[in-house]
Image 1 (spheres, rainbow, N blue to C red):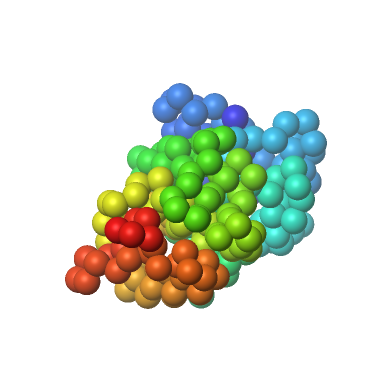
Image 2: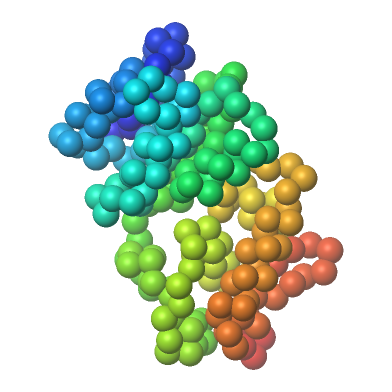
Length: 223
């Protein structure tokens, strides 16, 4: 079940129609209070969340969901008429997985939803390369036997590289796959996260290799 919190009845009807007719059962809510009531009955697989809402703004709702153990990992796509870089960063830094600016096409939204559901599918398989291990289920990272604390995007970036050992990803590909949106002109976001990852992983950070003129990949210490 997908939940949609959107106060515009026209947009809400259109999105719900598109989702349900694409084999993605969905339920819509006009106000945060209606949404919270439904959340007490059932936690959805994914939430489409508008920013400009009555009663409470979407960013406040997002922060509450991320602070609750029950909804901390709930996949969330922000829907908003605001399209500035600042608003995108504010939503993503608050814990959103993706960001879609109004007006948007129904097929684009469906594609974003399906992509996020695939990325969010639970996996219990631990990934280990050399002295570096990542546990997707517990979202835990160990380097040289010591636990490493990562942000949500740092973890997702590292897990993707480790699951695809040896594959070279461009910055744009990493933005699309990990951040889940097309953030043109902001490929330095990837560089910053890679630099921070290397620092936090200590000796294991050397596994993250730069392929000049292309992007990044991960390999074992002796690669």
